[in-house]
Length: 601
Image (cartoon, rainbow, N blue to C red):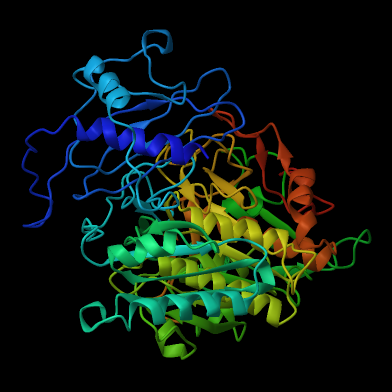
């Protein structure tokens, strides 16, 4: 409800502040220039908080933020209007005659207030139209995929959309629907707007459809003319609408192409090997010697002292870890033929940004930048993986140039969830999403509903593990990391301190190793690489989710509690900024042992 009341006020105030817009060389010719406009808003208790967006004749970027006030909540404001001016002062509630929903400031507060009182808020076509989300929204085109703090963002190529021409949008329908409701709705819109006259041909152009009866999620994406979008927004089945914008993949920094000291078989004195059956407490307990620091960290309770030689670092794990389980890796693709993955990596779906949907051809899953291959190796590779028996399902969404759209990412997630349900893998699978976009309500909604369940999966429990992001922020404004049901992962370094790049805050559920992680390279079937980022921390937890399922028999709805229960507590150093002091652990019986008192062989 508060969107309906506040958004028109935001636009009305901005419209009263029309100014000459400064040049902006980043925008292509013909695209309206933009300036910043800061607004403060307070939302009544119980109404929620966050992001507002409305569009007018010209699309312009407006950035602002909500203040925290008596626990009413906080987030970010984003609105589009003719033009906005930069705010210079703050208005106390007692000094303003604006409704308590909104405090807004511009160059002339009195004019703004009078404008609101004299001219009622505009009756915009669609109260459901948003270009962002209910909390923490910032720049919609700003995205990351587990990048290190110093990695520069690739250009997204985003162009501002005009409401008078066609634009790309994502439409999410109400919960509680079935697949035939989505079909009926799209047919209704198509017949109404594509057959009126020749000038409106293809006014309703769908590129992606999301048939999620199994997890209570339905929607579609496409290119729609403004008058069509207005009609869509007024339809009783429509829950909300979001802009579909490009999402560039920012690669986690490549530290080195390979690490010879831990590459299996490279040096006899430094080789990595396994010895089994070392304890009577659990016949499946396995120890792997001379492991990288990250595998040691998730199977012990204290960091390795600097004086302990690498040969004493061990990874204790259950040899059944990952057995008969599946990791759906939504990323840049996976080198399916890598020797470390054996025959356990399969092509799932490669998303295309058009009506062709997805490809199951293994050649289309080629990983051109290595991000997805590195992630898959952390989950399930023979030497460097957490759950060494797990199977990898590649869901490729980022093109070779690193480009994707929000609708592509949502389609990748939709395919993964539907495949998990179809294959009967609800309690045998995890979805790993090391890539992120700025807060994206449609994706967050899908993640939450996949966990909560739907008609074909009433018990729910489809688990999504998400990277917290690498902006060194204390508020997690990424998606799907900000989804309520996601397991959000922050990063630590070798000394168990929070990585300088890692996001923190109350949305982070758990930490895992993310600095200088050895895993697989996409360059050949045997190469290794070292990368850093929360992209690397996330697959550690995904592997542990599969461990919980395969070794401990945990269902998807119980794995988050299991992760908290077996996590190492109060050993992470640094400013947690509201995050729990929990380091992911595999719960093995020897996890309390500490070198050099470990068994010697």
